[in-house]
Image 1 (cartoon, rainbow over the protein chains, first blue to last red):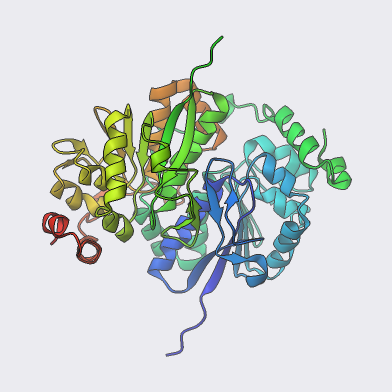
Image 2: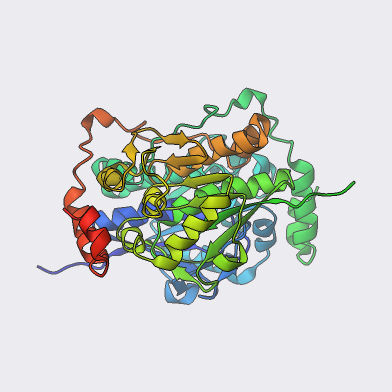
Length: 233
Length: 233
């Protein structure tokens, strides 16, 4: 029997990102790959050299952008200041744009959706991001929806950081069926018990990070007048 | 005013581990470090070179074991076959033993507790691990408790992979107070919504992985007759 090529799920690595945005989803798809040869996760970056994250660890991609031009699925993690700065990284944004064009599934975690939006992919779409960055998503033409994850056509976007795990279990169920998604959940023992329960959103001011975000925009995009004009305070 | 030295929270990196075990907790303590200068997370390893994980990404430590001999807190992540093989890694196990001796908090995620046990630290203690590896924990002298996390004196151990996030939010509350723990939870947006709800443990056979685990023990510990005799089928 002829074996078909596995479908590539590409995770985008870039300097300064929030590594849990990438590693949570990667662990989900890595576990899936143990159960079925149909999917192959790969981390792609501008370089295979180690790049720093927003916590003191460095991560190395398994392939360059050029080596994986047409993944089946693209997953774009986020971060804080460095991700805002990356909105002006032409090599990165152009890879996101071109890979997303041919991908059948395009996903983001946290502020990864800002990279999708900066690539012109979310104009007029429903989308989500980390609660503290929603204004930037709207300034880039998307409609912010404060859900754990949001689907609009082939685009699937999650809320901040840890939300990538929930979203990717949903993606696995869509791409490989409920049974495998439940099996992945069991093997990564995703049976959450936050010690203080869930977040009470009625007590959260989603604008509380705005001054910090404005600072990251002013600093990170000072060499990109066009983006600065769209995203500045 | 004199500023006291920050307390070091050391995360142990070794080849083949499950990176979510390390990165979830690291993101929790990395966020805490943004809110208080009292704690400083650092990833320690036998080398600062990139080491492979059990999914296709490589991770680099920020310091060697020798550079961080006496952390305030020690956090040991787990993994599958490679972690079992690591039980025979004298350099790693000796670091865990000596660092744990002086640390005020010693924590593990997933099968990281097997490394604590192999270092002789869990004899007669209540402990936990990934559900599929509980027999090994008991063979190493601990009493398995199937909770999300288990505390016994200065030792705190979590269940598999994703459980490290819950445990570390608990650790933050213990080390820095409830308010900061809630703030970390908000900023990593840990508001879990597993698409299929929580795991129904009444339907899970915790022995289903035993043949696989026995294989990893036989293969990974073939050069360590003593450990093989304790852990073998």
